[in-house]
Amino acid sequence: MKKIELQERRARRTRYKIRQSVSDAARKGLERYRFSAHISNNYIYAQVIDDIRGVTLASCSSIDKAFGEKLSKNAESAAKVGAALGEKLLAGNIMHLVFDKGHRRYGKRLAALVDAVREKGINV
Picture 1 (tube, one colour):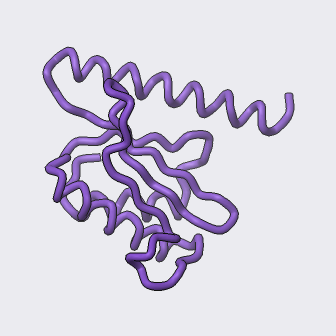
Picture 2 (cartoon, one colour):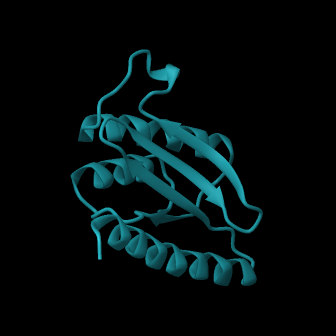
């Protein structure tokens, strides 16, 4: 198999498990949303998705104009993006998330992104 096919397969497997846990929580009356992160060659993107309604609730990236200048793709930038997303989630009164890493490994940049969201008081 090619590298891209393997990545897509891992991402599908991860998202399937996450969607199952989100739908199980919805049946129990809990609101849990999917926190999806993507790191490209240059930038970091993060968004919170409601899979039941199919809507993006909040998003943030390292190229947002709110940061003033474009951020790079290092762990410090990931922490800034995570903190900004955490602020948006607090404003929207969203407190419980399930992290979707896609096909990526849970490395330094993803850990910095998630830790910054957790520092704002969001349960990830």
